[in-house]
Length: 113
Length: 116
Image 1 (cartoon, chains in turn yellow, purple):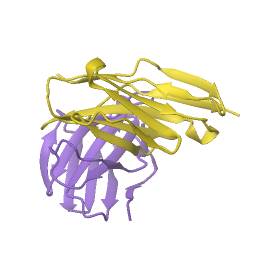
Image 2 (tube, helix red, strand yellow):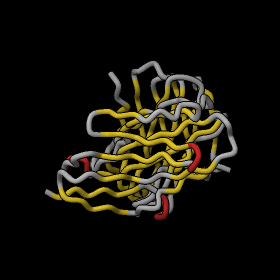
Image 3 (tube, rainbow over the protein chains, first blue to last red):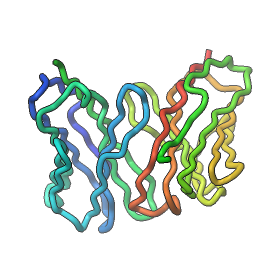
Image 4 (cartoon, helix red, strand yellow):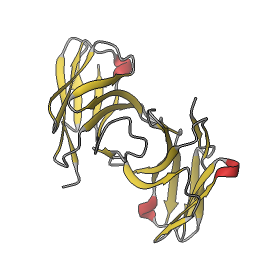
């Protein structure tokens, strides 16, 4: 069975603060992919990143960075210098071989000006 | 064009109505998906079409009937829905076979459905 846990239901920060969204996963597959999606109020899920289970290199894209640690089954997402436009629901997701994409419960991020 | 377009954006229907949700993509993707998302919950997979054939049905009630007329279009026909079916219905597509592990899904903005 596959499971994704996002323990933070809601986070509020003030603009320019850094914020980290936690994601912990469970899977028995040796090959799997992890994803982060952003869902702004408009509704569509926007793909942010995909990481395979063999690549533990951290990634930085502008103000976004991701820390993948296989030893702790975590794939955390950090936004540096947050902006109001970052306000959204963020979903971590997992897909093992031949399986459907499993989403975590989501974390609501509110960035106040 | 990297968009998945869904119509209508909002739909209100009675329990005896028949309506359809439409989804279109022009990215040449061969897998298309329907997800249901209740408020403050993650999306839940309903159906997957791969190469225009239904490959996954997540035990969805028969009052939801999917259709894939061609590789660019995906419909969801609704009939005799219940109030608890009110939700955001999201369409998504991905490039290749639906079971490919690394497939990145592109989502539409969804249809917000209210069943009265």
